[in-house]
Amino acid sequence: MKADLIIYNIGELVSFRNGPLARVSEDNAVIVRDAGIAVRGGVIVAVGRSGEIRSRFEGETLDAQGLLATPGLVDPHTHLVFAGSREDEFNLKLQGVSYSEILARGGGIYRTVKATLEAGFNDLLSRAAKAASLMLSHGTTTVEVKSGYALSLEGELKMLKVVKALGEASKITVIPTLLAHVPPREYRESSLEYARHFAEIMVPAVSREKLAVYVDVFCDRGAFNVEESRIIIEAGLKHGLRARMHADQLAYIGCSKLAAELPIDSLDHLEKMPEENARILAEKGVTAVLTPTSIMAMMELKKPPIEALRKAGVTIAVASDYNPNNMTPLQQTAMDIAPYILNLTPLEALAAATVNAAKSLNMHHKLGSISEGYRADIVLWELENYKWIGYMWGYNKALAVLKDGIIVHEKI
Ligand SMILES: [Zn+2]
Image 1: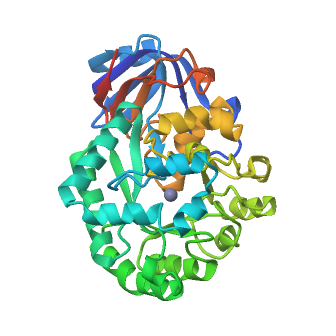
Image 2: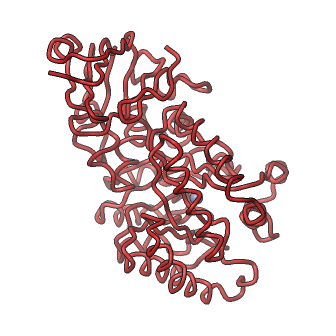
């Protein structure tokens, strides 16, 4: 049979066929030693032993040189489009000033809003493209990108058009999200009014122009409360968007409980979530998107209730949460430090960065797995086997990255 590409001599192939996975173990992982993969039309057409794939298919070949192969990483939470930087706030945080305090003083998100509004379309696009190419070369083949640094209809539309242009210009798959980040400063005392404006004007406009797949809201102290978040999420759902939500990061004000009432694909952060709410996520099939590098960037090392999430059977994903408060665009790093910050096993960390992240974006039927019919997004790692994930870290271990069957990064 003909194939566009045959990858052979894979030392160990690790994937998850029946994902998403709430309880990850070797029993529900697909682990094939001496493996091969056949790709046609950007899609995986066969997975098996190296010799068997080579004898069944003919076409171009790629010798994986005994390396570890996994699905391409899916990063389900980023703020990839922004201008400016906030390195002086890094120093403030080191001196013990909290993120909430920086935000209340008009720093944080508000500074980035100012810089983003002043930046031109092409400037925003070229910065985003640079970060996206760094992501690709480190194994991220799909990325969710949020708006939220403009806070006005015109500005958010511009941001989402940059996101769209990024998806067209880069090989990385981009999932666009309209984010209600914070109320503009002039609405600090009337955030409900802004939430209504967002729901009645901004959501329909974005939906009409098909510029977003998701609606998201930063439900937390200092951002939007539960009532305002509900208004925003409901508007998104009504206008054909799917929903995800920043919840319980800075304080618990009841945000994660909204998932009991509304169909929300993911709740992100959850550092302050009460353990008993894990049951809601499990029952409703909501993915918990955890952000280990962002936890470090908050300088408090406050961790989400991992054991409660595990025990309840919640699907756990990780994300880079790339933003000017957490300046790493790499899902590889989030995956690598997940064992240290979140106590995930290397196999759980891999599932969290691939199949479970795809589930949080409702893309798990075609992304996040090395299985027949899935898009050929594959990473070859400079690692002996999956047990080295997180064990060896701090430099780029992605030796080859394939996106839709095309090699987009290669060091082997
Ligand atoms: Zn975020």
